[in-house]
Length: 476
Image (cartoon, rainbow, N blue to C red):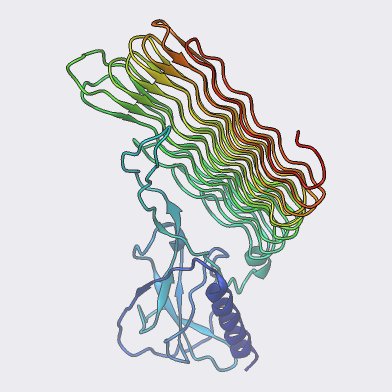
């Protein structure tokens, strides 16, 4: 009865933990077999591995299905299965029974598929959904419970021990493993390798630990005429510990380079967007957004990727800064990427600064600098400043990017300053500086942010931004 009680309690515990995972998704596989037989003599208890658990839900009360090997890394591929029967005083292994009726759960680390073509710079992005099975794989290791509870992930994308351990870094395009529920850092997301593939997301930490950084999107260089160059998006940084720990930084967007010089072909280049920074818990700084990927084309437009949004702070640490927009260059129209927005501080920290816009440069056409990202809001601390607009240089029309708006503060904090507008220069004297961003409003007793300066242009300078509203103190 002692052996049966231990197994039953272990299975119930594993079921509760699996149900608590917010993104747990199970695959089921039903197997049939002849009636199980009781082994004539006790054998060793089956030794699982600490990476996986198979709940005995819907299985006969006297039978537990056990899968050997490392099924979590092979999806639902066939593996050896045996039956534990006769749960009287101790379980015994009956090797003659090949399979049983029951429920087998299999989980695999998430791997991000290719992304569909998306626009960078000043347009919205679209990322195809990941092909993944994102649940944790929890193992009941009867022979070695320490390995199940404590240990680092050693295979790509593998989670750390249930309680203590670091998650492993992801393989190509794969999410990093999660850290232990108590202590452990998340693994770094894997870089993309396929054309347009997104980098893997960083793994989350538990109560204490740092989130893993997001992987970089795939870089794409092509000389084939009529083939767009497309950089992959950066992965999202992992969440820091709920009590103590920093969020992971977002991954860099992939660089897109099209070097074909046939003017009769459509040869655009689109850089990948930077990944969002990971959030932080009570004590810790949120991750910065990843930089947008640069873009270059010899005959067609070049549209650089936008910077990623800074991570959110839920406690007393600072929110993450927005990522810088990518730079665009070439002989065709060139558009610098937008700067990422600064992260928000929800409790006591400062808001994140907005990222600077990317620069645009064209030797034969028009160019536009990317706009700066808005500063992040704060509840009590200082709000983030807006990012500066990107510069532009072109043979024809050139326009500097606008500065980002300063963040708004809640009680007691100061509003963020607006970002400065980007500069512009043109070979045809057709250049316009970017406008400065408006300053953010302040909370009670705080000071409003100063408006950003307008950018210098050969034809016309940009307008300065307005100062933010203050509560009892002057702006600036």
